[in-house]
Image (cartoon, rainbow, N blue to C red; front, top):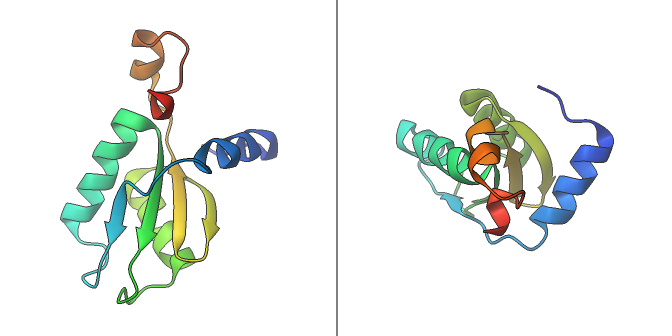
Length: 103
């Protein structure tokens, strides 16, 4: 799934106010971290991720690898922070039209 430029811009604006939900430390992209990101995307759709100082990966490289592992789209990478998005149709059925990351 690829995001249109307009949708990506909307998600970037929404992500501006989010706090990082996941932090990548010195151990990098472990299976446990990938599972944590997958769970966060399932419940929120839009997740901000912070790379630690000691992480051995670059932010863009980590974002691409993580997005591929969890089947998500990279919304943006700024410094050591990246934002990922993966739509969850189940959230849209149960919600009242309010995006999951705003609840």
